[in-house]
Image (cartoon, rainbow, N blue to C red):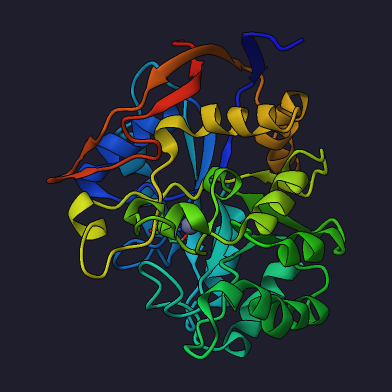
Length: 347
Ligand code: NCD
Ligand code: ZN
Protein backbone atom coordinates (compact mmCIF):
# COMPACT_ATOMS: atom_id res chain seq x y z
CA UNK A 1 0.00 0.00 0.00
CA UNK A 2 1.34 3.41 -0.83
CA UNK A 3 0.93 6.24 1.60
CA UNK A 4 0.12 9.87 0.87
CA UNK A 5 2.46 11.17 3.53
CA UNK A 6 6.18 10.66 3.61
CA UNK A 7 8.22 11.75 6.60
CA UNK A 8 11.98 11.66 6.38
CA UNK A 9 15.03 12.99 8.15
CA UNK A 10 15.84 16.37 6.63
CA UNK A 11 18.02 15.75 3.57
CA UNK A 12 21.27 17.40 2.45
CA UNK A 13 22.39 18.29 -1.06
CA UNK A 14 25.98 17.16 -1.58
CA UNK A 15 26.51 19.02 -4.90
CA UNK A 16 24.96 22.42 -5.58
CA UNK A 17 25.58 25.60 -7.60
CA UNK A 18 24.20 28.73 -5.93
CA UNK A 19 25.95 31.42 -8.03
CA UNK A 20 26.59 34.81 -6.40
CA UNK A 21 25.24 38.34 -5.95
CA UNK A 22 21.55 38.96 -6.65
CA UNK A 23 21.06 35.39 -7.89
CA UNK A 24 21.51 34.16 -4.31
CA UNK A 25 18.13 35.71 -3.45
CA UNK A 26 16.53 33.12 -5.73
CA UNK A 27 18.77 30.10 -5.28
CA UNK A 28 19.40 30.07 -1.54
CA UNK A 29 15.71 30.04 -0.44
CA UNK A 30 14.92 27.28 -2.97
CA UNK A 31 17.50 24.96 -1.45
CA UNK A 32 17.09 26.08 2.17
CA UNK A 33 13.35 25.32 2.11
CA UNK A 34 14.07 21.57 1.92
CA UNK A 35 17.73 20.88 2.68
CA UNK A 36 19.65 21.27 5.90
CA UNK A 37 23.12 21.50 4.35
CA UNK A 38 24.56 21.73 0.88
CA UNK A 39 28.02 21.46 -0.57
CA UNK A 40 28.42 24.63 -2.58
CA UNK A 41 30.44 24.46 -5.78
CA UNK A 42 33.23 27.03 -6.20
CA UNK A 43 32.92 27.71 -9.95
CA UNK A 44 32.23 31.41 -9.65
CA UNK A 45 33.93 33.91 -11.90
CA UNK A 46 36.67 34.20 -10.72
CA UNK A 47 36.66 30.82 -8.96
CA UNK A 48 36.84 30.37 -5.19
CA UNK A 49 40.44 29.30 -4.67
CA UNK A 50 41.27 30.33 -1.10
CA UNK A 51 39.79 29.62 2.31
CA UNK A 52 39.31 33.37 2.84
CA UNK A 53 37.26 33.64 -0.36
CA UNK A 54 35.22 30.56 0.55
CA UNK A 55 34.39 32.01 3.97
CA UNK A 56 33.39 35.37 2.46
CA UNK A 57 31.18 33.58 -0.10
CA UNK A 58 29.62 31.60 2.74
CA UNK A 59 28.64 34.85 4.48
CA UNK A 60 26.99 36.14 1.29
CA UNK A 61 24.99 32.90 1.08
CA UNK A 62 23.99 33.02 4.76
CA UNK A 63 22.69 36.57 4.32
CA UNK A 64 20.08 35.17 1.88
CA UNK A 65 18.78 32.33 4.07
CA UNK A 66 15.14 33.04 5.01
CA UNK A 67 14.73 33.48 8.79
CA UNK A 68 12.43 30.45 9.05
CA UNK A 69 15.07 28.09 7.62
CA UNK A 70 18.15 26.62 9.20
CA UNK A 71 20.63 26.11 6.41
CA UNK A 72 24.33 25.47 6.50
CA UNK A 73 26.42 25.97 3.36
CA UNK A 74 29.47 23.71 3.23
CA UNK A 75 32.19 25.30 1.15
CA UNK A 76 34.68 23.98 -1.39
CA UNK A 77 37.88 25.22 -3.00
CA UNK A 78 38.40 25.14 -6.75
CA UNK A 79 41.47 23.16 -7.67
CA UNK A 80 43.77 24.96 -10.11
CA UNK A 81 47.25 24.06 -11.31
CA UNK A 82 48.61 26.48 -8.70
CA UNK A 83 46.62 25.71 -5.54
CA UNK A 84 49.18 25.32 -2.73
CA UNK A 85 49.60 22.63 -0.10
CA UNK A 86 49.38 25.42 2.49
CA UNK A 87 45.88 26.27 1.35
CA UNK A 88 44.93 22.61 1.68
CA UNK A 89 46.22 22.64 5.26
CA UNK A 90 44.15 25.75 5.97
CA UNK A 91 41.04 24.24 4.40
CA UNK A 92 41.39 21.08 6.39
CA UNK A 93 41.56 23.11 9.62
CA UNK A 94 38.30 25.01 8.94
CA UNK A 95 34.99 23.19 9.52
CA UNK A 96 33.11 25.37 7.02
CA UNK A 97 35.31 24.15 4.15
CA UNK A 98 34.77 20.48 3.48
CA UNK A 99 36.30 19.55 0.13
CA UNK A 100 38.19 20.52 -3.02
CA UNK A 101 36.54 20.47 -6.45
CA UNK A 102 38.40 19.16 -9.45
CA UNK A 103 37.33 20.33 -12.92
CA UNK A 104 39.41 19.30 -15.90
CA UNK A 105 40.19 22.64 -17.60
CA UNK A 106 37.34 23.60 -19.94
CA UNK A 107 35.06 20.69 -18.97
CA UNK A 108 32.01 22.80 -18.14
CA UNK A 109 30.65 26.17 -17.03
CA UNK A 110 33.41 28.37 -15.58
CA UNK A 111 35.97 25.59 -15.77
CA UNK A 112 38.54 27.62 -17.69
CA UNK A 113 40.75 27.72 -14.62
CA UNK A 114 40.55 23.99 -14.00
CA UNK A 115 43.41 21.53 -13.92
CA UNK A 116 45.26 21.28 -17.24
CA UNK A 117 47.13 18.08 -16.38
CA UNK A 118 46.42 15.94 -13.34
CA UNK A 119 50.15 15.40 -12.67
CA UNK A 120 50.48 19.13 -11.89
CA UNK A 121 48.33 18.70 -8.79
CA UNK A 122 49.90 15.50 -7.45
CA UNK A 123 51.56 17.29 -4.49
CA UNK A 124 48.22 18.75 -3.47
CA UNK A 125 46.41 15.42 -3.86
CA UNK A 126 49.05 13.71 -1.77
CA UNK A 127 48.42 16.21 1.01
CA UNK A 128 44.65 15.78 0.71
CA UNK A 129 45.03 12.03 1.00
CA UNK A 130 47.12 12.52 4.15
CA UNK A 131 44.58 14.87 5.68
CA UNK A 132 41.47 12.99 4.55
CA UNK A 133 40.12 16.04 2.69
CA UNK A 134 37.76 14.81 -0.07
CA UNK A 135 38.33 15.51 -3.76
CA UNK A 136 35.08 16.10 -5.66
CA UNK A 137 35.56 15.15 -9.27
CA UNK A 138 33.88 16.35 -12.44
CA UNK A 139 34.66 13.16 -14.32
CA UNK A 140 34.84 13.99 -18.01
CA UNK A 141 37.79 14.23 -20.37
CA UNK A 142 37.88 17.41 -22.41
CA UNK A 143 39.67 16.12 -25.51
CA UNK A 144 37.76 17.43 -28.55
CA UNK A 145 38.31 14.11 -30.31
CA UNK A 146 36.33 12.21 -27.68
CA UNK A 147 32.61 11.98 -28.35
CA UNK A 148 30.65 13.94 -25.75
CA UNK A 149 28.65 10.84 -24.80
CA UNK A 150 31.88 8.90 -24.09
CA UNK A 151 33.69 11.49 -22.01
CA UNK A 152 32.81 10.05 -18.62
CA UNK A 153 33.83 6.53 -19.54
CA UNK A 154 37.11 7.81 -21.01
CA UNK A 155 37.80 9.76 -17.86
CA UNK A 156 37.45 6.59 -15.79
CA UNK A 157 39.87 4.74 -18.03
CA UNK A 158 42.44 7.46 -18.61
CA UNK A 159 42.43 9.53 -15.40
CA UNK A 160 40.46 8.09 -12.49
CA UNK A 161 41.88 4.60 -12.44
CA UNK A 162 45.44 5.94 -12.46
CA UNK A 163 44.67 8.59 -9.90
CA UNK A 164 43.27 6.08 -7.43
CA UNK A 165 46.07 3.61 -7.96
CA UNK A 166 48.53 6.38 -7.16
CA UNK A 167 46.53 7.60 -4.12
CA UNK A 168 44.45 4.62 -3.03
CA UNK A 169 43.35 6.24 0.23
CA UNK A 170 42.30 9.55 -1.32
CA UNK A 171 38.68 10.29 -0.39
CA UNK A 172 37.03 10.89 -3.71
CA UNK A 173 33.45 11.63 -4.75
CA UNK A 174 32.71 10.97 -8.40
CA UNK A 175 30.18 13.75 -8.91
CA UNK A 176 26.94 13.54 -10.90
CA UNK A 177 27.64 10.14 -12.44
CA UNK A 178 25.75 9.47 -15.66
CA UNK A 179 26.71 6.03 -16.95
CA UNK A 180 26.58 2.36 -16.04
CA UNK A 181 30.40 2.43 -16.36
CA UNK A 182 30.62 4.94 -13.52
CA UNK A 183 28.23 2.90 -11.37
CA UNK A 184 30.33 -0.23 -11.91
CA UNK A 185 33.56 1.63 -11.26
CA UNK A 186 32.32 3.05 -7.94
CA UNK A 187 30.92 -0.31 -6.86
CA UNK A 188 34.36 -1.86 -7.27
CA UNK A 189 36.19 0.74 -5.19
CA UNK A 190 36.78 0.73 -1.44
CA UNK A 191 34.78 2.91 0.97
CA UNK A 192 36.81 6.06 0.34
CA UNK A 193 35.20 6.34 -3.12
CA UNK A 194 31.56 7.39 -3.45
CA UNK A 195 29.30 9.08 -6.00
CA UNK A 196 26.49 11.60 -6.22
CA UNK A 197 23.51 11.14 -8.53
CA UNK A 198 21.36 14.03 -9.76
CA UNK A 199 17.61 13.91 -10.00
CA UNK A 200 17.64 14.91 -13.66
CA UNK A 201 19.86 12.00 -14.66
CA UNK A 202 17.40 9.72 -12.86
CA UNK A 203 14.32 11.26 -14.48
CA UNK A 204 15.51 11.87 -18.02
CA UNK A 205 17.65 10.56 -20.84
CA UNK A 206 18.98 12.02 -24.06
CA UNK A 207 15.66 11.59 -25.86
CA UNK A 208 14.23 14.21 -23.52
CA UNK A 209 16.99 16.54 -24.67
CA UNK A 210 16.96 15.81 -28.39
CA UNK A 211 13.95 13.87 -29.70
CA UNK A 212 11.25 15.97 -31.35
CA UNK A 213 13.20 19.21 -30.95
CA UNK A 214 16.21 20.41 -29.01
CA UNK A 215 15.32 21.43 -25.46
CA UNK A 216 17.95 23.72 -24.00
CA UNK A 217 16.62 23.41 -20.46
CA UNK A 218 17.52 19.71 -20.51
CA UNK A 219 21.09 20.48 -21.48
CA UNK A 220 23.57 19.89 -18.70
CA UNK A 221 27.02 18.43 -18.22
CA UNK A 222 27.73 15.63 -18.10
CA UNK A 223 25.12 15.44 -20.86
CA UNK A 224 22.07 13.16 -20.44
CA UNK A 225 22.84 9.65 -21.68
CA UNK A 226 20.77 6.82 -23.19
CA UNK A 227 18.04 5.10 -21.19
CA UNK A 228 20.10 2.02 -20.29
CA UNK A 229 22.44 4.32 -18.34
CA UNK A 230 19.48 6.06 -16.76
CA UNK A 231 18.26 2.67 -15.53
CA UNK A 232 21.70 1.77 -14.15
CA UNK A 233 21.78 5.02 -12.17
CA UNK A 234 18.31 4.37 -10.77
CA UNK A 235 19.30 0.87 -9.74
CA UNK A 236 22.32 2.26 -7.88
CA UNK A 237 20.35 5.08 -6.24
CA UNK A 238 17.58 2.83 -4.90
CA UNK A 239 19.92 -0.02 -3.96
CA UNK A 240 20.55 1.26 -0.44
CA UNK A 241 24.31 1.11 -1.05
CA UNK A 242 25.87 3.94 1.04
CA UNK A 243 28.34 4.76 -1.74
CA UNK A 244 25.57 6.57 -3.61
CA UNK A 245 23.98 9.74 -2.35
CA UNK A 246 22.00 12.80 -3.29
CA UNK A 247 23.69 15.66 -5.15
CA UNK A 248 21.36 17.73 -7.29
CA UNK A 249 23.96 19.62 -9.34
CA UNK A 250 21.18 22.20 -9.56
CA UNK A 251 22.86 24.74 -11.85
CA UNK A 252 20.80 27.82 -12.73
CA UNK A 253 21.48 29.96 -15.78
CA UNK A 254 19.46 32.98 -16.92
CA UNK A 255 16.99 32.19 -19.67
CA UNK A 256 18.81 34.40 -22.18
CA UNK A 257 22.01 32.38 -21.72
CA UNK A 258 20.18 29.03 -22.20
CA UNK A 259 17.89 29.86 -25.12
CA UNK A 260 20.55 31.08 -27.46
CA UNK A 261 22.95 30.10 -30.20
CA UNK A 262 25.46 28.52 -27.78
CA UNK A 263 23.51 27.79 -24.63
CA UNK A 264 24.96 27.15 -21.18
CA UNK A 265 24.90 23.74 -19.49
CA UNK A 266 22.89 23.36 -16.31
CA UNK A 267 19.45 22.29 -15.06
CA UNK A 268 17.78 24.22 -12.26
CA UNK A 269 16.24 21.55 -10.06
CA UNK A 270 16.42 23.11 -6.59
CA UNK A 271 12.77 24.31 -6.54
CA UNK A 272 11.54 20.69 -6.58
CA UNK A 273 14.58 18.52 -5.96
CA UNK A 274 13.54 16.38 -3.01
CA UNK A 275 9.99 16.13 -4.40
CA UNK A 276 11.32 14.76 -7.70
CA UNK A 277 13.72 12.32 -6.05
CA UNK A 278 10.64 11.02 -4.19
CA UNK A 279 8.89 10.61 -7.54
CA UNK A 280 11.82 8.59 -8.91
CA UNK A 281 12.13 6.37 -5.85
CA UNK A 282 8.38 5.75 -5.85
CA UNK A 283 8.40 4.80 -9.52
CA UNK A 284 10.96 2.12 -8.63
CA UNK A 285 8.90 0.93 -5.66
CA UNK A 286 11.68 2.07 -3.34
CA UNK A 287 10.36 4.99 -1.30
CA UNK A 288 11.75 3.23 1.77
CA UNK A 289 15.28 3.73 0.36
CA UNK A 290 14.91 7.49 -0.15
CA UNK A 291 15.92 8.49 3.37
CA UNK A 292 19.24 6.64 3.25
CA UNK A 293 20.11 8.15 -0.13
CA UNK A 294 18.95 11.68 0.69
CA UNK A 295 19.67 12.04 4.40
CA UNK A 296 22.16 9.45 5.69
CA UNK A 297 24.75 8.24 3.18
CA UNK A 298 26.25 11.64 2.39
CA UNK A 299 26.51 12.74 6.01
CA UNK A 300 28.14 9.42 6.89
CA UNK A 301 30.62 9.71 4.03
CA UNK A 302 31.64 13.23 5.06
CA UNK A 303 31.82 12.24 8.73
CA UNK A 304 29.14 14.78 9.68
CA UNK A 305 26.24 14.15 12.04
CA UNK A 306 22.97 13.05 10.46
CA UNK A 307 20.27 15.72 10.71
CA UNK A 308 17.85 15.36 13.59
CA UNK A 309 14.90 17.35 12.20
CA UNK A 310 12.37 15.95 9.74
CA UNK A 311 10.53 17.05 6.62
CA UNK A 312 7.17 15.83 5.37
CA UNK A 313 6.18 15.28 1.76
CA UNK A 314 2.50 15.02 0.92
CA UNK A 315 1.03 13.51 -2.23
CA UNK A 316 -0.64 16.69 -3.35
CA UNK A 317 -0.01 17.62 -6.98
CA UNK A 318 1.16 21.18 -7.59
CA UNK A 319 2.37 23.14 -10.55
CA UNK A 320 5.91 24.35 -10.94
CA UNK A 321 5.96 28.05 -11.93
CA UNK A 322 7.05 28.78 -15.49
CA UNK A 323 10.00 30.85 -14.31
CA UNK A 324 11.61 32.59 -11.36
CA UNK A 325 13.31 36.00 -11.21
CA UNK A 326 17.07 35.54 -11.40
CA UNK A 327 19.10 38.73 -10.93
CA UNK A 328 18.20 40.81 -14.02
CA UNK A 329 16.98 37.76 -15.98
CA UNK A 330 14.68 34.81 -15.26
CA UNK A 331 15.57 31.15 -14.71
CA UNK A 332 13.45 28.30 -16.06
CA UNK A 333 13.20 25.51 -13.50
CA UNK A 334 12.95 21.79 -14.08
CA UNK A 335 9.33 20.79 -14.93
CA UNK A 336 8.48 24.46 -15.61
CA UNK A 337 4.70 24.89 -15.83
CA UNK A 338 4.14 21.17 -15.26
CA UNK A 339 2.90 19.14 -12.36
CA UNK A 340 4.86 17.61 -9.51
CA UNK A 341 3.38 14.76 -7.47
CA UNK A 342 4.88 15.32 -4.03
CA UNK A 343 4.64 18.57 -2.14
CA UNK A 344 6.85 19.67 0.72
CA UNK A 345 4.83 20.63 3.80
CA UNK A 346 5.59 24.15 5.00
CA UNK A 347 7.54 24.27 8.26
C1 NCD B 1 27.35 23.38 -13.95
C2 NCD B 1 27.24 24.89 -13.87
O1 NCD B 1 26.46 25.48 -14.62
O2 NCD B 1 27.93 25.49 -13.03
N1 NCD B 1 26.64 22.93 -15.11
C3 NCD B 1 26.11 21.70 -15.32
O3 NCD B 1 25.59 21.45 -16.40
N2 NCD B 1 26.14 20.80 -14.38
C4 NCD B 1 28.76 22.98 -13.97
C5 NCD B 1 28.97 21.53 -13.73
O4 NCD B 1 28.78 21.03 -12.61
O5 NCD B 1 29.33 20.83 -14.69
ZN1 ZN C 1 28.06 20.77 -10.73
